[in-house]
Image (cartoon, rainbow, N blue to C red; front, side):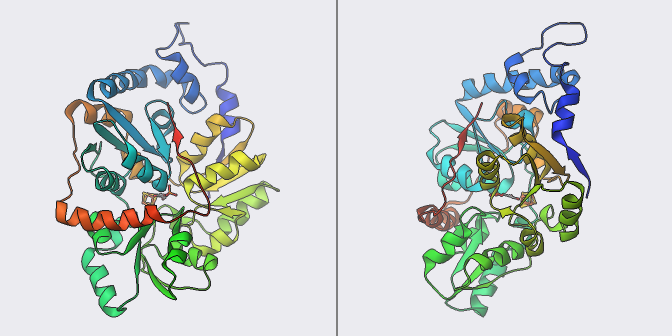
Length: 357
Ligand code: 13P
Ligand code: SF4
C-alpha cells in the first residue's frame, strides 16, 4: 500500500505560505492559510478566483454548500457551509433554510437532500459522481429479495438510489447501522447492498441474523489485512482506523472502525501521535488542517466519484443552476419514508455536523 506522511509534506511547504514568488500577497489569504498544508502556494492564485466566485454566487442565490468529508481540502475548508458524514449531511439537509443546496459529494447524497427538503433546489455539480454501492443494486433486485425472504425487513444503506430506498423499510448509514437494526427488534434482517458493512455490523448485533447482498465500495474493498500489517511494521505503535465499508478482516486488524465523522471524532478526542485512516485519501488531509500535531500516514485510495467535484464545477453549478436533482413525487414519498424512519432512530453515539467556512 502506498503511503505518504502528511506531517512531513506540511513541514516541507512551510515558509512558502501567503506570498507569491514576486512577494505579492495572495488573494483571500485567510482562506489560503486553512489549506496551505495541502495546496501548494503556487496553485492558489489559480484556485482563488473560483473560491471568490462561489462565495459571491452563494450570497446571490441564497445557497449553501454541503460537503462530504471526502471532498478535497480546497472545497472542504473554503466554500463548504456544512461538512460531515452521510448521516450528518442528511440531517442538515433537512434543516436547510436557504433556497439552494449544492451537494459537494455524490449523487445519492444529493438525492437524499432532495427527499428530505423537497421545496429546495438541490444541485449536483457533476451528475457523473455516482457510487459503486448505489450501482450494485436495483429496485427490482430488492423486490426479488422481498419475495425470497417474505416478512424480513429491509434495511438499505443510504448509498443507494431513491428507487431502491423506495422499496426499503428503513435506511441506515455507516454511523447508525447497528442502532437501526436493533431498533427493528426482530431476529432476521436484510441489510443491503454493502456486504462488508453488513458483516461488520453483524459483529455488533450478534443477536440478529443479517442477510446481505454482494455490493462493495470500490475504494474500501481494495484494502487488505496485509496493508495493515505493512503499516504497523513500518510505523510501530501507529493507531489504525478503518471505515466499516472495508472487508471485515481489515476492520478486525484495526484499532477502531466507524463512519467518516466517527473517525474524525476519534482522532480529535484520542489524539494519537501517528494515525492511519483506512479510507479515502482526502479524509486525512481534512482532519490534518485542525490537528497539525498529529502525523497522518495516508493510504492513497481515491474515490473517483467524489473527486469529480471541483471548485470549478461548483462555481459553474451555481452560475447556471445545474444540475438539478428531480425525484418523481410518488417514488420520493416512499423513499423519504425510509430515510425519515432512519432519522427517527435514537442514536447511541452522537456525532455533530460541523459548521464550516
Ligand atoms: P460516511 O457515511 O461514513 O461518511 O460514508 C460515506 C461513504 O460513501 C463512504 O465511502
Ligand atoms: Fe461510494 Fe465508495 Fe465512493 Fe463512498 S467511497 S462514494 S461508498 S464508491
